[in-house]
Image (tube, rainbow, N blue to C red; front, side, top):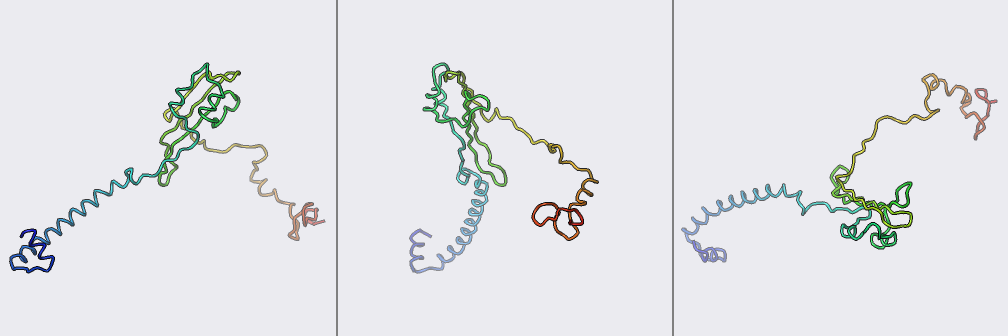
Length: 196
């Protein structure tokens, strides 16, 4: 069957017995092949669902410092005013040293059912002398991070632990028999069990 014969057949042309026989034998075969190809494409596309086309957007947190900007900092000549103009205000200062500036940044990506995953992390520590001149530049990355685990237990404070007997008998005498509170507060009679 020629392409012209298919065109005539689709346009209401005359159909011969030979054309009908060929069309009937080819059509189910093509349909079956199409179904197999479509099913294979769908199955192969399922693993691609996690690729970058469907990936969650990253979030930048903190004050990111560019590597080129770090290269412009020269210890011994750069001042605090130069650093502020180049990098902006620091994320924080060290607790007991105002001459140590810290710039902290993270790039994170959301994860299903968990905390966001940290893709990149950079901590830049700048140390200045008393005159405000840069002494040292330290750059820490994600590989320098240390995992800090939570310790089990509680911190004991004085006066908060009571024995079983103290818990059982601790309320004796605090309430009056009429159901009101004792003591000098609102509605209190101030006299123990007798309410006197």
